Length: 167
Image 1 (cartoon, rainbow, N blue to C red):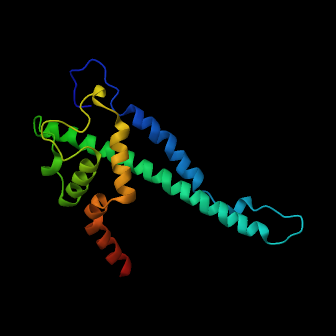
Image 2: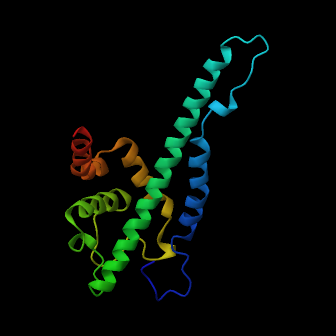
């Protein structure tokens, strides 16, 4: 956290524990259904259809868990780059001026949907007592699912990836 004068700060520890719980879920939900192919007593194809439904449900759960993990990772990234900027720029927390133009766009987008525009006077998380981290994660998660702010920030990089893949 930004407030080093406070006696005890948990910082992003709770979010770290969340990520440590979500990452195995992403792997579990992403597993194949082929090795779980059940045999039917009459050897008809009813089970093929049920496996497709199982695979679709696991895929949906995997995407959901991945979105949560990505939202949490962006909270870590924003906090880290703001704290690092303060060490380089003597207490100035807005990382916009020290990042490349591509990273700057993603930083500003993630910061704005999590808490608001970057603030030179303080990082995203200053003190443990100022509020819940979950609100910041949910701001990013909502934008990943329904919004356009982060998607717009990533558009130039995605366009280059698509152009590269087309060649």
